[in-house]
Length: 222
Image (cartoon, rainbow, N blue to C red; front, top):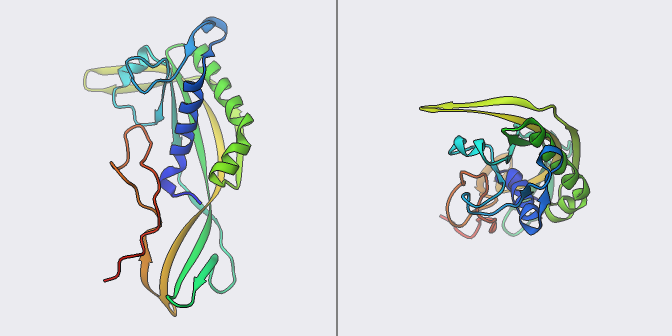
């Protein structure tokens, strides 16, 4: 089960690892261009992160893959008593529950060149298609369905003294996954809700990644 904050993170880190482990070469007009990801933004051949671009001007000379998601919706509820329950501790009264969730992941491939944006979308599509089983095994996703490759469209970033126009070709992934929660109740009244996951280090990163999951918080009582 994954915390909601890690839905985008898993795809960002997977794409970074793939583009950093080898040399992916462009096609067509971009034949011979190497898309090699490096953490140093001054050295990387491609930007891979969440949708928040701190400095849009970098897109004028560096192609990018940005990962975003739609609103997450709960897909299923069970009708039995103790909805979605997966475990119960009779000594403490704590019960563990699971919810089936769904959302769309958008992989946006940006470039100042329309053909390059489309080529990157094609590369991202086939990388994700060939590794669908990896996501199921590594993150326990229930279903990962790839949509098509979008037609390149111009998008514009505007700000104080900044105006950037780039081409965007996207890939949509329809994702279904489980997430969990734990609480202690008496009858219909919840006495204590336990935070399902905690992070170490800094909070949400600008690039869309997060610190690692640690454990449930349930060892502190008032």
